[in-house]
Image (cartoon, rainbow, N blue to C red):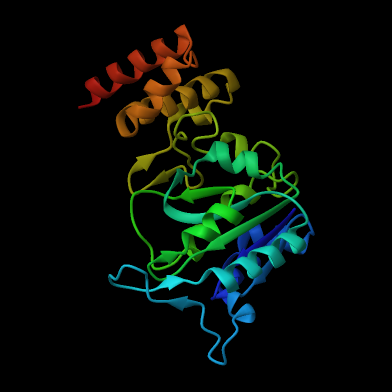
Length: 251
């Protein structure tokens, strides 16, 4: 897969290109990352990409000419796939969208700066606007890096274990269960006995119960959404009751 970041700070791509899971995906040629700098398409000697907004007001707005040419150049590099603009006004990014993007052969991520991007660029060049949440960043680069990382985890062969992404939080619509490793006892707290039992059915049942219970406690909206979609079985509902009873006894 080939991802192109359109940004006036192209060096920020190094955070995902050179490190961790995404860095390994690049080295293994499962993921290609490239950048296009709108300043390279500016027409004045100062390489300006912004100007004052029509109608007045604070801040500056990214100009349509250099940005449009930069996006068009990025499209040629990516070869295919959508153009996504990082914006607090966009659709909320989630794991399902990350999985969908991983099926694309190419992708362009547009990172705005300043007060925003000339709306004519959004209308003519962008397929969708994407938001990480209800907050504002200084620019779209950090959001774009998050998208790359979340999406890359779903590319075939990127993670060490084929089931790793599928077992992460949100992959099933639920939060993940707790995890433990050595030592068996730390700071007086032991690993849950069931995880040491070797009983794989009991372990899976415990993990499902913890995942359901945590989601109920921390993100009840996710659980309700799953319930409305028919994603909770009768055994899941029983596990939720068991979890609540265990928490009550432990309180």
